[in-house]
Amino acid sequence: MTELSIASTDADRPRARTPGLFKKDDWWAVAIGLGLVVIGYLSLSFGPGLAWLAVLPAKWSHADQLAADLSKNALRYVAQFAVWLVLTTTALSALGYRLRQTVPAFAFLYVVSTLIIVLGQWDQAVRYNLEPPLVALAVGLILANLHVLPRELDAGFRVEFYVKLGVVLLGATLPLTLIVWAGPIAFLQASIVSLVTFGVIFFTGRALGIDPRFAATLGVGGAVCGVSAAIAIAAAVGARKQDAAVVISIVIFWAIVMLFVIPFGAQALHLPAGIGGAWIGTSEFADAAGFAAAQAYGEIAAKVPGAAANASDQAVAAFTLMKVIGRDIWIGIWAIVLSVIATTYWSQDGITNRPQAREIWTRFPKFVIGFLLTSAFVTFVAYQVGHADFSKVTTPALVTPIKNLRIWAFTFGFLSIGLTTRVRDLAGVGFKPVLAFSTGVVVNVVLGLVLSVLVFGAYWEKLSP
Image 1: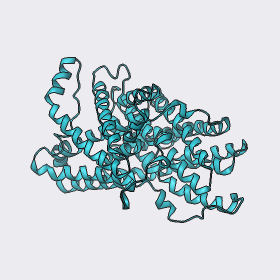
Image 2 (image 1 turned 60 degrees about the vertical axis):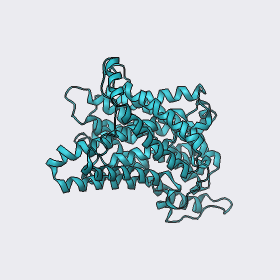
Image 3 (image 1 turned 90 degrees about the vertical axis):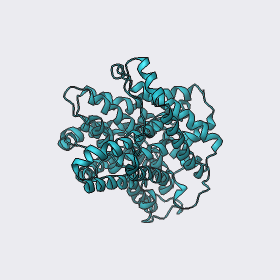
Image 4 (image 1 turned 180 degrees about the vertical axis):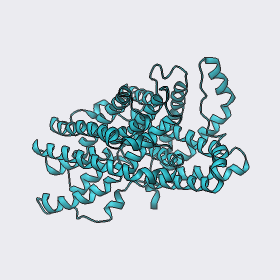
């Protein structure tokens, strides 16, 4: 899982004041996401459930239509903002961030996200490629690099928290049966990509004279997920602190590049939504940017004549299975394996971290548990009420509102990517690490395309969330 901001890595996070599980944003994302799903289900007996709260701008072609819709639902937007504000600031306060920073930051985030979603609902948005994830990133980058906002507001632009929350909510729209069916394929493809990409980056780095600890951190940053991988692996192998910062910088650069390249590359190749989503899942280097790319390509693929009715969801589902279920869990595996190798072969002074089996659990992305729990809960509900009632009653009253809230959470995350990414922070990382990582990028993109289209294409094309 990657947060696209050097300034907002775990190392710079203020010390959390909350004991126990809720020291990490993973568990807050699980608690809030699962709580919304359960409350949404329980509230079905008392009225519209979450449907009233989970408002989104309607499609529009003229300004008067937009104004009428916003005016009609003004109270719903105010209520939604209040709920999001309470949930997010409570979580961020528990993680150690100050209300005087997080409240104005989230208010700004909500207002701009609303404008971005409104723009995405314009009937000409597709014509001009104004996909909300790409617009959110571009707007954020412009504002951040023009230094329009105070740097302190970064405390409220928590990319990882918003994207993890979106992933947990995403589980409610993906049945557990689908995850079980496609999981082995996703893990196999992810394993191939992880092993090959790591090998290319690591051995290229070693050939260039890069220290093995640094090369290993680079390799896992490209094979799994940048920031979390860089921090975890640097600690596991005893790399220098600046090595992790360099890897983070390179990952940020390539994640942003791939956010634009892969969706439009998939469009040029006329890939079905599921296959395009799987390719993004194997070729992106950050979860947040990957979700933005998958959502953008899903919207593009859905507009193609003859496309499946659920094409936009299909792209996101394929990406999730490939990246979140497939690749992200490798971070724990790499941490334990490389700590063993570092202790056994790379120790120069005898001072290295002793490998421990619990490292796999420590490094495991906990929000994946929330994703599986929400998927299992909604799958159980579908089983209890029956397919017909679930499609006619429960889906519009529960699943669709959760999907709308997921769109808000992801938009907060996409915008936060840009708002916390400063081009100045990406400079000065050195030629050799960039070359080693970029070599892995080329192999990763080509291998991901081959696996997604030629080897496992039949599975991804038939994916039906």
